[in-house]
Each structure stands twice: as structure tokens, then as C-alpha cells.
Picture 1 (cartoon, rainbow, N blue to C red):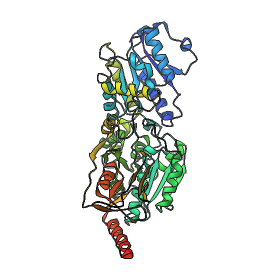
Picture 2 (cartoon, rainbow, N blue to C red; picture 1 turned 120 degrees about the horizontal axis):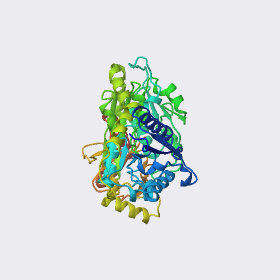
Picture 3 (spheres, rainbow, N blue to C red; picture 1 turned 60 degrees about the horizontal axis):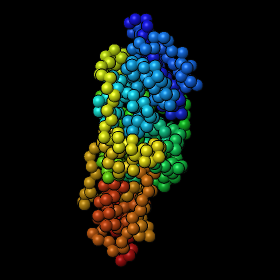
Picture 4 (cartoon, rainbow, N blue to C red; picture 1 turned 30 degrees about the vertical axis):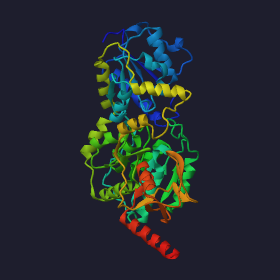
Length: 513
């Protein structure tokens, strides 16, 4: 390489409010430092935000740059990239890291999208996000490269064959509606009420983010309080412990290296990787996670440790069957006591997710840049999203709700699969966030919003469904039960609970006879 070109890395800590980015951006900075150190590239960093483009301190050879790297798309990196490409006519290809931007309709990119070309490369951390990115920009170069976090992890060098007398579950992450913790509590209630999980405990580590579902314009204030109330309602007060937000180092010392089963029931719209899942996997532990987004990519590296729970298609977007989640947790507890993790398998994974391994793959992107100078083509879906954003006032809202067909398309990309269908021979229970009284059925779903249905007392084709957790029986029209199943609000009962519901129903019938 000649001395008058090189790689310019635009990096920023503007997204430090997003806790994951406090780890991700420094890791990417080290990747490009390693490329400079081991590949002989002249790698120069500019960390913003800076007050003005004139303060960038760019060399005279800026027009001969080999590449421009953007570690995170923020207002400052967008403004600086536009300054380089529009004002200084720098044509060097850009390597742009994408973190959940695709399902947000590339909101953070703003005008940068108009100046990206086929020579530029999007770097994503999962195949799901790669497909979502191509859904908006069909002719874009997209490369999947894992986030290199394991170098900063504490990794146990002890015996990975961890046994627990009492199964200990752990959740590490944001306490957010899209993370689907309410369904996890529902699943624990099913296990407890069925007698399948004696002594199981769940430790929750994380703080409330009050994010809601900004793509839908939905919020659910005080979600953490709702979860604590739901815990009490379901009789799980001795099962669940809420620890709040903890420092990352503390989590490794007290969670990730200690015996546990990590659970991640998330349906988050930009769950593109899963650093907490990776942290427990590389320490040899069992993980139960939704078959969603970045979780899917871990199956290749940890096939005997990772249990993926199917994500079902409903008319209201993705849902997780709480019984399937309960069964997966039960299976993981059995494997935890029977299986020894192969150290060679763990070492192979550690190499894959290391900074040196990622640096090698990242350099290949830089060294093999192809494509022409044509601007990126927006898909019809991206045009529709742009129009909607304008219609909704320029906010992050781009979908009408979880039933929105465009949103459903992205959900399919992220892992939404089999459709939920009504089985007239099954016994059903309503989710705890569904209530029935005064001839009104009410849904207060913290994830997907609230709605209600007026019930006709003259029920046609009645179906008895159980209420959770009382197991009292509510008689509803079969057509409504079928709709509730299709929407992901009514779920089949396991045999033990079906018998209990039948007993309560019979007692109620005898009492009114």
C-alpha cells in the first residue's frame, strides 16, 4: 500500500445510551486498529462529535482514501460522511455497520441513503439483518460479520459440566415490552401449575428502558411494575427475583460464569445478535432462546447448548407459545445435568467471535470491494416506509401496528414461521393479560396494545376457555376463540391443567344446577 492512502474510521460514542453499544463500538475500533497493526494498512481514526467539519484534521491525501468506515450511524457520522462525499468528492467506498437500522427503515441514515452506492458495504451481525437490509436496498453489498465481543468476556476455565440441585434460570438484558418477559412469566406459571418445575428460580438482571414499540408508535409505561404485579398474580413471588441493572463485569462474575440456564424470550424488532446469549454459551451453559434474529446464527456454533423456541405467525405479529417455552426450559434442565460441553467446540466459537478473527474477515471486505458507482436502489418497500415516516410526522413510527403487512414481512425475515391455528379438540387458556367480565373481553397486552370485544350473552357455538391464573372458565363463541388463537391470546393447555380446568368447570356447573 502506498503511503498517501489509507482507511479513515469515523467513530463515535453518541449511542452510548444504548448499553450494548458501549461494548460494540470499542470492539469495532479495536478490530480496525488490528487491521492497521497486522495488515499494514494506514488506519486513521476520527472520533466525534466534533463541532464542525473544519476540525476533522483531514490529510491532503483524503481524496485517495482506500476506504471509509462508519462504526455507528449517528447524526455526527452521517454529517461527516456526507461532507466527505459531497463537499470533498471523496469516492472511497464506505463500510457502514448496521445495528437494527433495517427494521427501523434506516431512520438514522437520513440523507446518507441518497449518497450510498453499489461500492459501499453494509456490515451486519446476522443473516436475519442481512436479509432485512436487502429488503430495503436490493442491490446493496451486505456482509455478515459477528460482533467481536468475546475478548472482553470473562470465560471460565473450569469444568463446564455444571450441575444444579435446583434449576436456576437467568435473564440478562433490557426490561422492555419487546423482550417478551411477560410470556416468560406465563411459561413459568404453566410449569409450576403443571408440577413440572419444582424449585425452579428465575433471576432477572436489567433495567427498564421505556422504549415500547417505537416503530408502531406504541408505549406501555411502567412495564417493570407491570411485570412485578404479574409475578404476584401468577404466584411466582418466590420464584422470580428482580435484581435491576448491574455492571457488565459484575454480571460475568455472578451470572455468566456460574451455573445457570440463560433464557431469552425476545421478539425485539432489531434483535440482531444477542451478546448475553453469547456470553453464557461460551461459558458452556445451556441457553433457551427464541428462534429469532441473531439467535439463529448461534445454532451452528453451539448445537448442543442452544435450544431455540419457535416463533409463531399470528394475525398480530410474532408470538411465542408459552407451553413451548416451558417445555424448552424443562428440556434444558435435563440436558444441564447430563451433558459435558466439548472444550474444542467452545474454542472454535471463541475464535470465530474474537477480534482477530473478525479483523481478518473485515479486512477481506475492504480488500475485495466491488460494484459500480451507481446509487443504491430503494425497494418499493423502502419507498413506502419513507412515505409513511413523512405521513407520521418524521418520527420513528413507520408501521400502523403489529398487524401491518410490511411489518409482518420483516417479522418473517427475523424468524416468524408457522401459523397458529385453532384446534376445536384442544382445551385453551387465555393469556394473563386477557380478562372477561361484564360481557366484555379485554386485552391489555403490554407488547402489542390494548383492545376489547363486546360479548353477546346468547353465545353461539360456545367454547369453554380457562382464565389464567384462576382457571375459572369463561364461555365464549367459537369464532371469537378461533380469532384469539390466531392473534396469539389463547393457547392450548397441557393435560394436567386441562384436567384442572375441567374440574373447576364441572364444580361451577354443579353449583348452578
